[in-house]
Amino acid sequence: MGRRFSFACPLGEREALMAAARLLDERMRHIRDSGRIVDAERIAILAALNLTHDLRQGRSSPPVDIEAIERKIQDIENTAQSTISSCSAS
Image (cartoon, rainbow, N blue to C red; front, side):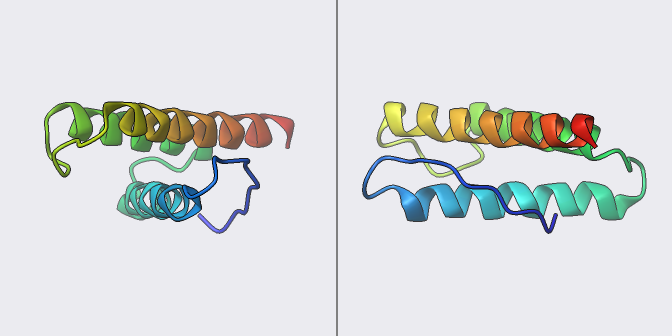
């Protein structure tokens, strides 16, 4: 939602992390634009929950590498936590 963060990631996974960040941003913007929720922390949590639910329901590509999927989930959780922390500090 227009914010930039820096994260360390394993070599060769930058594009995957960027894609995950774009997807999270897209979901957060969709939730915000619906007008039902305006608090950035709640938006981040709902977007992360929705993405995790979709992943668990198999609405994404079939997982080829479970560890990679788990890392992506962790990245999403880290992004959500970072957003929550930065909003709380404001």
